[in-house]
View 1: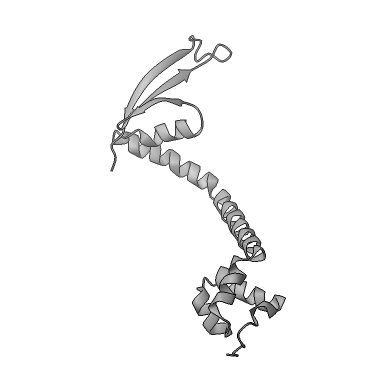
View 2: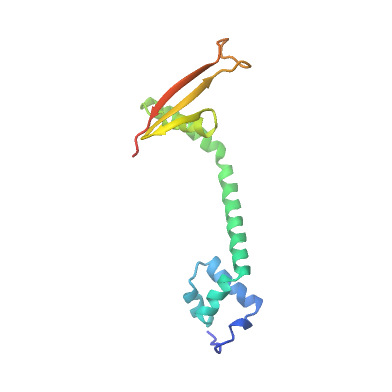
Length: 150
């Protein structure tokens, strides 16, 4: 480990700045640990990590990680949808209709009317003038779903 004279922190090369940024952003090291590994002053390390180029790099890495995670999750979306359907049936067999309610809410098929103390009221629209169900006029069903916090 090299030791640097006091006051030389501003003389970091771009490669040295990148090394410090990588230690922090990729390896998750603290400023103190980076200072020990590089022989630089902790204040110098902190200044590098507070700088605009470090913030921009952090944002870039976070964006790339988020995009990679979304790509992986999209690969599971059909499998998750099938599992949700299975969960709806399994839960309904036990009298629990929360998975079905969640699916209807999250897909926009129903909208919550109110939510008070574990009870959610929903309005369910069955059919429409343009697309009646079995020739029946459209209906609005006002349903109350009770959920218990676990």
